[in-house]
Image 1: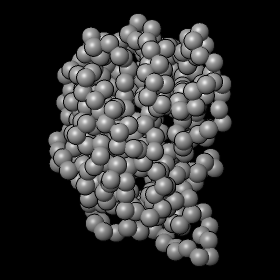
Image 2: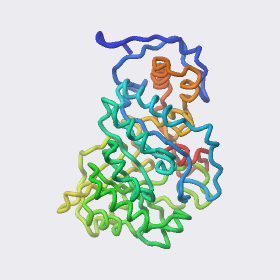
Image 3: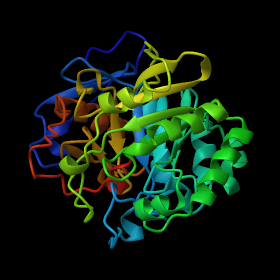
Image 4: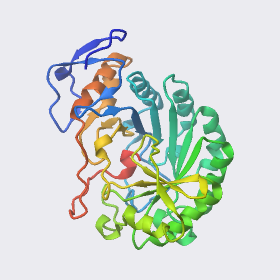
Length: 363
C-alpha cells in the first residue's frame, strides 16, 4: 500500500520475522501506513474481536465440550499485551473492538482493560459479548469505562433447557445481568441466540417477545462447525435463518433493513416496535465473507484472519520477542492482511470440523 504524504512510513523485511502459522511468510517488504488495513481482496479491515480468555463459567453445547482442558495462564496474553496490540490496530485504522471469551468477565481485573481501551483516541465502538452471568456485578463499571454496546447470549427462557444447553448455567443470573445492562444505559443491548433444531427452535417467538418487551435487539445465529462439542452434529440441528423468519411471520410483520453495525448480521425491523431490531447471522444460508471487515485475536495471541480457516499470525511472539517495538508490531499486522483468505468453507454435508472450539476463538 502506498503511504499518504502526511503519514509515517516504516519498512521491515517480513521474511525475517518468524511469526507465521501454517503457511510461508510473504516475501519482500511491505509498508506500514496510517491508512486503513486492506486485504488482497480489497476489503477494508476496521473491526477487531479480542478473546481475553478461553475460560468460561458455562459449557454451552455449541461452544465447547463438557470436559475442557484450558490453556495454562502463562500462555495467555497479559492485559497489558492486549492493550498494546489493540493500540497498534487503532493506529492502523481499526475503530471497532469487541471483547469476547470464553466469558470475558471471569478474567481477573478485566474492567481495567476496558478502561485502558476506552482511553484510545480513534476507537468509536467498544463492545462486550458475554453470557450475562457476571453483568449484575459489572454493568455499571463497564459503562463508566467506555463500553458502548453489550451483546448477551440467551438461547432459551426455560430454566431446564438453559441448564441443559449451558450444562452448568443459571438462567436467573443471566436475566439479572440483562436487566442490569439495560439499567446501566449502554447505547445498545442485544441478545444473541443460537437456534438448534430439537433444542430451542420452538422458542424463537418467545425470545423476540422478550426482546420487544424490553426494547432491545436480538440476533439469531446459525451454529458454526467449530470443535467437537460431544453433544450433536451441526447438520442434525441446523435451523436456518429463513425458517426462523417464517416462524416470526406468524406473529410479527418484519421488514428487511439496510442498517449495519459493522458485523455480519443482517437486520430486520418489526412493524410497530421501533425499539427492537432482529438480526440474522447466517454462515450457512447466507455467506457473509465478501464484505468481511474483521479479524480476531485469540487469548493466546494468534491473529486469526478468518473464523472458518486456520490462517494466523502469532502476535504474542512479536510483542514478547520485541517488547515495546510498536512499528514491528504494526508491520506484522499489515503483513497478515496479505494472507487473509477469501472466506470460510463451512459445509453442512461434511463431517469435518475445525479442531478449534468457539471459546478459543472469540465470538
